Image (tube, helix red, strand yellow):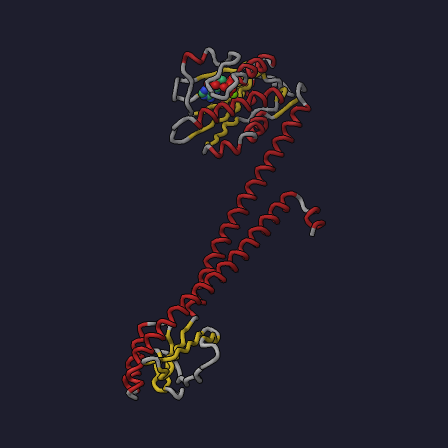
Length: 370
Ligand SMILES: Nc1ncnc2c1ncn2[C@@H]1O[C@H](COP(=O)(O)OP(=O)(O)O)[C@@H](O)[C@H]1O
Ligand SMILES: [Mg+2]
């Protein structure tokens, strides 16, 4: 068992342990409930049956004493109010059956069992409980009453409980499993991000040809989970743009912050539909543009001029470093980072403009290429 567990991957181990513990909990809970229900319901029935026997005995005493079986049979008819009592019999002093009762609808004749005198007065036979009680008049034993109760209702109820409980625990277990799967998916996602960041860290400072839409997708992937948490609808407006010579580490650093800022602006907005629009295009003036637009909280016109200042932030936990360093990185690449917003509540658009250094510069104008 130990070796089996040791060889399992962590994900399987988690699933295995969860299944095992919840399975054990299910069995223990079922057993506990069944035992409790069995004990308490039998106790309750026993109490009821002894009271009923006492009453049936008291009601039959006079008829028995006067040797009137019809009276006693009539007295036993009152047991029909108790649906659990299937059969009853009153015996005379010599332990001979004197009067009988059988619940309506019960099949077959019933032969009165021999009176249990000195032995136990309570007998459980399968789903039935038999009870004998002496009938006394003025302290003298004049006969015996016998009652037979049906326990199948109780057993059916216990099974009903157990079924309902196991169904409930089953759905609960399925929910835990789903959460676990969600968790492992997130772990995979984190692993992917770390791997991607490491690969970018390695190539930092290296200028190579890259597809701009692919870089945008990479930056987006780093925020995908939180964007879906905030119900953000992502729109891609990617024009067909040839690969360009860029430092992907720098581009990614800028884009990751722009998307993070947009996400923040959207999470605080009460727009009916939260939209993040990502664009890639190339202008005839030989410049490529990557835009990140949102319909979030927008930017006050006073702040538009200060937004790239080092340390400017309106967030409680912000640093005001992202746009500042982004603008510097854009300038280092011969480009610019621009902002546009029509004011508070009107969303914002950030555009990263870069010179398009292509593999095969077009002979004519760039418009001809597109
Ligand atoms: N998309 C946006 N919508 C509204 N305000 C924004 C947006 N992007 C940036 N800002 C504003 O610019 C500030 C500076 O952003 P940034 O330099 O990335 O630093 P930080 O994110 O740490 O605050 C933000 O605090 C916010 O006030
Ligand atoms: Mg930021």
